[in-house]
Structure formats: C-alpha cells, structure tokens
Length: 242
Image (tube, rainbow, N blue to C red; front, side, top):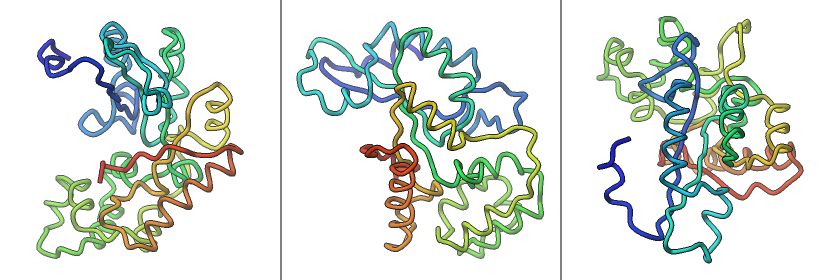
C-alpha cells in the first residue's frame, strides 16, 4: 500500500479492510489472483494499517457516533470463513491486540465447500468444470473460455439456485486438510470475542437469485448462525458486494 493510496482519506472517515484467506502458495486452495494473501504480506499489511489507523471492533465502527473526528478508524474483516483465519490470522492479530470479524457461509461450515473455493481446488478436474459449465445460461460461451475465467462466467451466466448448489457441492470426500472453518471453529472464535457475521448460505451473487432463493441465502444462513452461537446475528456482508 503506497502513500498515494491514502491521499483521498479525510478526517473522521471510517474504513473496513476485507481479507479472505491468509496462507502460503503451497496450500492447494491458495489463489493470489482471487482471495489469498500470503502470511508475510498479511503481517506487513496489518503492521502498516495499525500505524495509519486506530483499528477498532466492527460494531464500534458502524454504530458509535461519538468517535473522534480527528482520527482515522478501521476494522478488519474476513469473508468466506477460511480455516486459515483461525489457524494463522488470529494469532497474528492477537499479538497486536487487533480485533476482527468473520463473515461465514453455512455451506462452507457444513460441507467445507463453496463454489468459488471449489473452483480453485478442482481447477484441473475437467469433469467437475464441465458440470458447472452446463449451468451457464449463455450458450455462446465456449468451454475453453469458461475454463479461462470460471468465476466471472458463473457470476454472469448462472441462475443461482438449488440446482446449482447440488452440482457445485458434488465433490468426493477425502481432503488432506479442511479449507473452511467448521462449526466448532466458529464457536471457538465467537468465545474468543470475534464477531461472527453472515455472508449468505452459498456465496451466491444476490442479484442473480430469485426471491425464494434470497430467503435461503439470507434468512437461512442467519438463523443457522443464530442457532449455532445462541446469539443474534446483526451483520451481513453481501457476496461480491452485489
């Protein structure tokens, strides 16, 4: 992050810095292009942010009207609930006494799968990619074009529904290491004071969901987390911001 990056920042503004996965390139799910930050880069970035901002809990950032107008405030969040948050990032942030929040998805917690991370893990499995390709509504997209940028193609040309869920979750068991936080991980983070928010059931793009599917994505995920943690879930992060 350069000095120029911070030039537009004005007094009394509040910022949220969003991360996903913090791991190294040797990990099978690592995707520097899409969502991964190396451990060394994460340490450097957090140190830099801590010098430039007062990093506060997300609740305070979005609700406290009495924060000083002479400071820059920021919160750190993680989307998608990658296991590396508990395995790696939490220790780094705890050492600096930096609070953070995690926005999680039911399918990641229950099945250790989301369609985006599945695409990275199975990018060389042409049979699996062919199944996802069959869901595209735009038949002018070739399979080779799809393979070159499947996340974009799915976001643009898939009807996000129960049928797509059944197809993207159809992966054999047998991972060497889990990709996402499971229910016990979420409970442990919550008990450690980490804010847990909702990020939809399947990480679907909201503006490509029917009204019924929106209920599955928003209400079902919120209620699942509420039941898991025995607390109200007050924050929702929209997948892809759409």
